[in-house]
Length: 297
Image: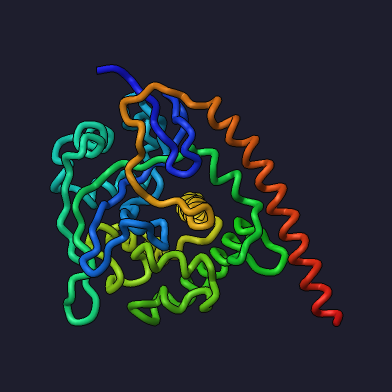
């Protein structure tokens, strides 16, 4: 079988052989109480990440290799012990996940056991590894004062970790109380299933245990292991923020089996985008002027 380019889940740019990527295993699911045929609100409307970022390279055949052997890989082994068997994580992703052979059964409920969504299968999603660096200095509605989003996340992460070390022995759900209610880093953990076992399914449990164990073992904020975890979580949040703002969603990528690079189309589209953004900037400037005038009057 021939080789082909991957597709970045954020930029939609081709991913070439050997390109560094951030890869995620994603759970495809179907809501029982609504359909999203014409669109959905959040990046997780049709699929949701099941892992922290897997740092690897695209292997030219739809999957990844040269995977960084770190805590994420150790956790994946725990998450999917019954499915991986005697394979390595890299072999399992290549031979099973990428070929759509892995199914899951998870029912998440609302209210008194009313079905909310039913999981269907596990897929491989990836984006270019350089993308989080592009978003670090962006200021948006989630960053406060004069901070960029990246700076705000790091400030909040340090506050979160300091609180967690201080109160970790006071409550079995101590993570709820860390960093304050507006702590961007702490709030990010809860949708990922870290904050409480009440909010998650069994596949997220090893990540929750990993974070809590580091805290209970009193790993300081500047510890190399903690910093690796924080970088992964912050990169995830930068990616998710970009996806939310740019109307992207976790979903299988089209173009599988194609060697078409498409760079000329992207260059042509960039020219059109620059022209469009110029009109947007002009319109926003008018809005600002009108707003300032209304205040003065």
